[in-house]
Amino acid sequence: MNLSAARAKLAAVPDPEIPAVSLVELGIVRDLRETASGVEVVLTPTYSGCPATELIADDVRAALAEFGDVTVTMQRAPAWSTDWITPEGREKLQQYGIVPPQCSAEQAIRIVPRLRCPRCDSSSTQQLSRFGSTACKSTWRCIECLEPFEYFKPI
Amino acid sequence: MDAKTTYVLRLADTCLIHSQRLSEWAGHAPVLEEDLALANIALDLLGQARALLTHAGQLEGAGRDEDQLAFLREERDYRNIILVELPNAAASPSDGGGGRDFALTTLRNAAMAIWLELLFDRLQTSLDNELAGIAAKSLKEVRYHRQHSSDWVVRLGDGTDESRARMQAALNVLWPYFNELFAADGVDGVGPAWDELEDEWRARWATLMQEATLTLPRESAMQPRGIDGIHSEHMGHMLATMQFLQRSYPGGTW
Image (tube, rainbow over all chains, first blue to last red; front, side):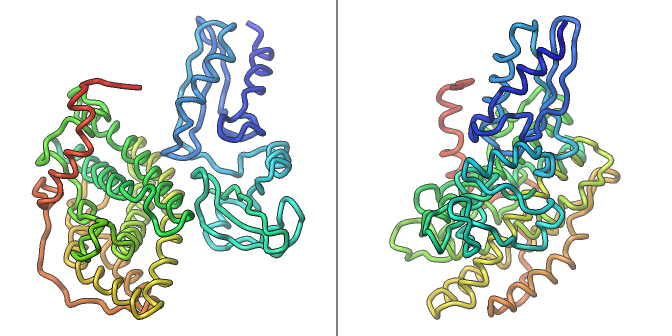
């Protein structure tokens, strides 16, 4: 078994809802290990109700099929945190037009961040709603260039 | 059913029915952002309910999974509090027939989010590891629900004469049902008796009501017992909608 080849394959699986980042960059892959008949991947779901959870498991199974039986295990604790998004993942989110979390999950309980528009870099922005097109994002707009944008909520 | 299973099921059913009621807003909220917000909150609650129902089924040990518990039980078997099964327009019988009152939904969401935040916070240290894991995850989600719904309660309560009157009407209708938030027994090592949450919940609620310039009604002696399966007349109608597909096409998936 070539575990590093499997790891490389796994690292290329994109998130189905935000394809700009991979599952590994999003920080939801806990472990990849060899089993008697193939590999086991341990994932941490992002939100309890995330509808992409089953799709993600299917994508992982398909990507690793060449390594034998693929077991996908969901591990709830410790709960996923945006603190686990990698620096590369943050950079890619920003370039994709989604502002990455600007503080840790703990700080987010107390403060509403001041964001810069990912398009024109203006700091004149406004939160429209704490929720967005998916559970993990909130909706903002730029008062300068008038474009809406999304923010990946710290959690 | 033992006390531990009942304890988990009461919370699971409360999240499930709260989610179902909230999902009736999909496509009908006053503004697009709120449509997204209510749908997202409903989705979080549904995810929490799924995990809790699965766990309740395992504790029960009769081989029932989340779907069997959600879709194939009778009305009397549900253990949710009555507050969450009340129709979205319970405070406004003459709402024009839409069946949805944003004031009531907003107020109920805030009350439930504050309560769930207190309960999930305590359940993080449950000796039941699965329940503790579900609680730690859910706590992060309900914090956002609480912030969002509290903002709306203040905005509408301390708003126009019309919005304030409708919020006060909603509060007057929901008020007696809040008593059930503190009605369930605890189970040693699993989770607290709900009445342990009462002082903190009432203190936080009073602060919110003050900020929203709403007046707390007089204490009510009503003791709703949805947690024992004694539901309001609305529950059966809601289940008819919720269960129709699974009962018509047993085991159907997509």
